[in-house]
Each structure stands twice: as C-alpha cells, then as structure tokens.
Amino acid sequence: MASVTTTPTSNGAALSGAVSNRSRWLRHGLLQQLAALRWGIVALIIVGWFVYYPIVDNLFVSTTTQDIFTGEVAYVGLDNYRRLLDDPVVWRALTNNGLYAVLSVVFQVFAAFVLAAIIEGLRSRAWRNFWRAVYFIPSAISTTVTGLLFYFIYQPDIGLLDALLHLLGLQNLSYTWLGDERTAIYAIIAMSQWQGFGYSTLLFTIAIQKIPRELYDAATVDGAGPLRQLFCITFPLTREMTGMMIIVTIAGAFQVFNEVMVMTGGGPNNSSQVLGTWLYEQGFNQNDMGYAAAIGVVIFLATLTTGLLQLWYTKRRRVEA
Amino acid sequence: MSAVVIPAGASLRNPWLVIGKGVLMALLVAAGVLVVYPLIWMALGGFKSNSQIFSDPFALPDRWSFDNYAAAWNQGVRNFLFSSLLVTVVSTITTVFISAWTAYGLTRTQMFGKPVIVGFVLGGMMLSPTVALVPLVQMMQSLGLYNTHWALIILYTAFRVPFTTFLIRAYMLDLPRDLDEAAMIDGASEGQIFRKIMLPLCRSIIVSCIILHILFAWNEYIFAMIFTNQIDVQTLPVGLTSLMAKHGTNFAEVFAAMTISALPIVVIFFFTQRYFIRGLTEGIGK
Image (cartoon, rainbow over all chains, first blue to last red; front, side, top):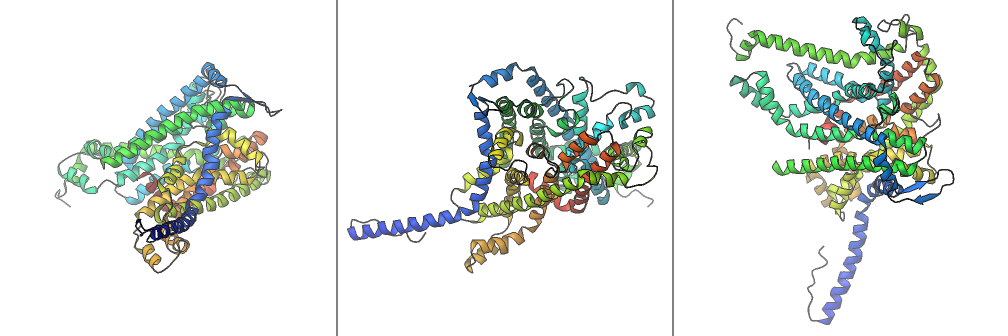
C-alpha cells in the first residue's frame, strides 16, 4: 500500500520512476491478490461447478430432447414448456405441492408455535429440554426410515393405524390410506407433519428463549394472564421467526421428494405426484431428460421466489432493527 | 405458607388456570406419545416374528431375539452402514474444512472481490438439489464418478458448503479481532493465524457444523438414490428401500434394518443436543 506515494510531476525521470514503481506495485499487488484469492477459490470452484453450473445447464437441457440410446440431442425450443402446460400431472403435482405448503404452514408453523409456547411455559428446565428433545427425534431420522415406517403403519388390516381404529371400535373407518387416489397425498403429508413439527418447535423454543424474562414478570405484575401474555408478548416478539419459518416451510414444500418416493412413488394413478417425483419419473424412468429439466425449471422458479422473499425479509428486518 | 404472598400463587387457586394447565399437560403428553410410539413400535418390530407383528401389533415381543437384527445386518445393512459411514465422515471433513477456510478468507483477509464471493457462495443456499439432477447425472457420468462414493462426497460437500460457510462466517464476524491482529503484528502468516488462532477460537461452532452435516449426510436420499446403483456403494437410506423391495414380505427384518439405520443418528442427537441447537440458533437467529 505504502509503495504508491509518488505524485505525478512534469519531471520525466520522476514520471518514469512512478511508472516503474506502479508496475512493481501492480506486479506485487497482483501476486498478493492472487495469493489472497486462495481463501475463496476452493469454495468458488466447488460451488460453482457442482451447484450453479448444473442449474444453469438445466435451462439448456430443458430446451432439448435427448435420446438416451443414441445420445443424440435435438434442440426443440419451448416445446417441453408447452407440453408442461398441457400435462395434467404437472398441475396435479403443483396442487399437491401447494397442499403440502398450506398444511405444513398450519402444522409446522402455527401448531409448532403453540407447542413451543407450552414447553417454554414449563417451570422446570429439565422438562423443557426433555420435551424439546422428544419432539425432535423424528426430525433426526431419515425420511426413508420414517416413510417406510408409515408405509407399514398405513397398511390396511395389518398396519398400526387400523389396529388402533379397531381398538377404539372405529373399524369402519379403516381404509387403504396410501392405495386410494383420494387419500394418498394426505396420508403422506400427515407423515411429513409428524416428522417435521418437532424441528420447527425447537426453532420456536429458541426464539422464545430470546425474549427477556422481565417482560413476562412485568406482565404478571400487571395482572396479565397466560393467554394475554401469549398474544401480547410471545407472539409479537417471535414474529420474525414466524415470518421466516413460513417462507422456509413453503420453500421446503416445493422440494418435497423423499417421502412421496418412498411411500407411493407418486401413485396411485399419479394422485400423489409432486414436482420432484414427476421430474424423477420423467427423467429417470421415462428417460425424457429434456422434459424432466423443464420440470426442474418450475421447481427452480418456486424455490428462487421463496429464496428471494427470504432475502428481502431478512434485509428488511435488519434495516428495521 | 398460609398467606398468599406471591400473586402467581393466587392465580394457581383459580380453577380455570388449573384446568387449563391440565389440558396443556395432556396435550404435551399426547403429542409426545404420538411422536415416539411409532418409533418404539418399529424397534420392537425388529424383535418380533413376522406373524406377531400383525397378530398383536401393540404387544411386546414374545421373545427378545436378535435374529432379525442379525439377518438384516447380513442382508446388506453392513455394507450400507459402511458406505454411509464413509460418505458421512469424508464429506463432513471436506465440508467443514472448506467452509472454515472460506469463512476465514471472507472475514479476515484482504481477499479481492469479497462481497461478490460472499453473495456467490451463500447464494448457493437457495438452490435446490432437485433442480440440478438431470445435468448432474450427465456430469458425473462423464467424470466417471457415477456409482462411486466420490459422487456423493463431492455433491454433499458442494451443496452444504454454502450453509456451513454461512454459519462459521457469522460466528467469525462476532469474534474480537484483537488476537489475530496481535498475531499479525508478531509476524504470523495468514495460514498460521487460521490454523493456530481462528480454528481453536471457532471450536464450538465447528462442532455444531459437524453435527448438522452428519445429520444431513447420514439421511440424504435423492443424490444417494440417483448416483449409486450397487449394493456396495449404496448408503443406508437407499439400501433400505432396496432391501424393502427384495425382502419386503419379511417385515420383521425390514423393521430391524430401519432401526439399525435410525439408531446412530438418534444417539448422536441425544449426546450432542447442545451443539446442535447452538448451530441452529446461529443459523436462524441472525
């Protein structure tokens, strides 16, 4: 830094001195900058190569059809997208992803918030930790395991759910939950909520813990009951977390894949298909890579929108703070 | 304790509050049972005989035998477990190291174009793996990495570096600069400061990141399913579904395999809760 102190003058010698000085600085600085870049280059390469590039490449693939056997690639323009608009399964999948989003917001944001408020209202710290951990366990386990588990639980006549209905004398409610077009997607979503709500409960308990205790003490002195405290302190002061959770949950709902794949594979008759599984079906079972890529673009747009929403939300929050 | 001294004590006498509390406790316990019972049923299923699983689903096993667990283990679970372990351990090391390295560069060095790099790397958090699937398959095939553990290690690293860097960077930003500046004046190189000062200072967030990554890698399914197709490369989540396809009628064995697959992660979660929660707090709370 200190090397560029020479000021340009009309003196030729000083000028040339400044030039050689500058070029030395440039050479030195360039080397230094290149050396400094080593701290960023590894992440740039690996993330650029394996995350960004394939997502951009996916746009190109989506304008082609590819013959898996001959390896021939043909440019077809927007054909895949036209096909997308006419594909009833795509609309079905979008509806299912939307259902996923709505129900997940209800259970993983609002129900989880209530549960978190109850847990944090407990006097004993040990019990608070205990309940948080208990609810979280399913979230630690892979969706493959929980999906398979619920596949068994939902089995008609032999599964746990039907056994429970029999025990309660409700055997006429017993049903082929995953085998019926009307119920399959709901059965899958129910499993997801079972698995996911402990995770958001945990996050909400973290947010609630950050609220200063004095606020509650003051409210108690003022005679505010627990419900009043919930609505006037806990809820407003965790609003940021709630907003964030809604966005993250919706983003997650458009990326659903595992549980649908494991439990129904999108069936019966495509009734539980979501965008992710339809992409998989088209790309890897039907070998229609171009069309699969076009479905990928739809998922990309959905997640990008929610991602930008999230960014805007955090930015705004930080400005307000 | 005769007179009511604390107002809160008085409110306890209010019957509505007592009833309300009772209802809440009941809710807590009911939700707890709902969450845990299916998992207990799964673990017990591994001990039962196939017929007992369905004849009396709520009963305890007739006899506690590890036969199903042993059979599942020999049916391929051993291979899957090994693959999962390998992929998880290696990708955890690469992810956390690259992320700490990058985070250091982004917070403490004179790196050129920092804001752009921050935006680029952290922006990767927004991109979903599903979207990249089709090109990635072609890419991995042309790299000759298809159906190898490397494919998974590379992808887990690439897709988790943004999030992990984000966590470690946030932590480093909050660390006081006194120590590393003092070391710089004493003539320590950037590499030495990174290794000897920053890494030890960041120990707790690094532990959190390790745990979050283990949780991710152990359970990942899409990549593992698409990029591996042989029993000796498949990880547990994928292996389970292929086991199910092959031995699906032997429910007890599948239950045992599922339990073996879930157990390590539940144990890890219980022992490392503190760090795990800290990682989440750092990530979400900022």
